Image 1 (cartoon, rainbow, N blue to C red):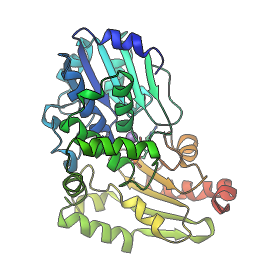
Image 2 (cartoon, rainbow, N blue to C red):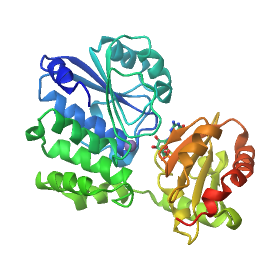
Image 3 (tube, helix red, strand yellow):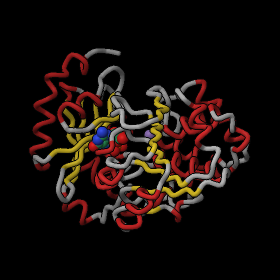
Image 4 (cartoon, protein in one colour):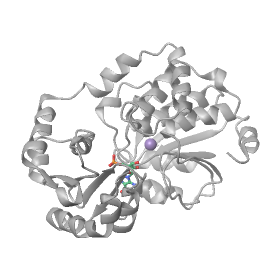
Length: 336
Ligand code: 5GP
Ligand code: MN
């Protein structure tokens, strides 16, 4: 980070700090936010984590999770917290419109903002930025941030559990976005005495029977393969949401099953939400789903994992995606 000394100086006095992250926070959003929360509290700052919407159950065990404020549940206290802050940390997202009403509350404030993120194509709204696209996760960047502040001696088991959870979920258990650096960071976290097997169990083996059956339903009844474009689509209707009682986080990871089919290069998971249709995209190799999400679905993300939304209904959105495929034929059919 440029100006790290200036920020270090700012942090030398106790401040009123808000940490926020994106809507539908995933393991990395909550892991990085809570790790930073535990770290900053060591310096006698007042720290409040505020999310636009509720986090999923599989991260509810993380230390500090019960103290998080959720804008959807408590808009007034969330807005007050943001307005009272001297410093706002924005983690794991790169544009204030990713946090909806919370973003609208933050945008007009001239409060100092710090962005820590690894997504492509950021808006430059923050005063300080720690931004590295090559980082596996924002959690890895929180470790970098502590290192740059020369504060790694403050790592403890709570911070370690939060960071490990963020890294674990954003890399799909160390399958994507790995690097020698990442494994060194993880080695440091394990040396804090955290139980990595227990964390994997808490995060990945907490499904309800209904949701394992939902996975079966997706694969048996809702999956379409388009071999000529090496693309797979899984879509869920609003009725599926009702029947399987799908809550936040219950569909996490389903999109990745499509990439298990030999030859498949792009995977789409398209779901009918109350007002919008949400689209999750994954790819292998050089094909950029970030570009597809950004250009066609008002979204963004990473080269191989991105998302966006559409107002064209479920069938309309599936149709739109299929119509787009020929434009990306070269990248899709390219062997890399
Ligand atoms: P997921 O498919 O798991 O929801 O998201 C994959 C990646 O795409 C995440 O890094 C997420 O931040 C990004 N992403 C998902 N939906 C959107 C969206 O609507 N807008 C933007 N800008 N990024 C998104
Ligand atoms: Mn992330």
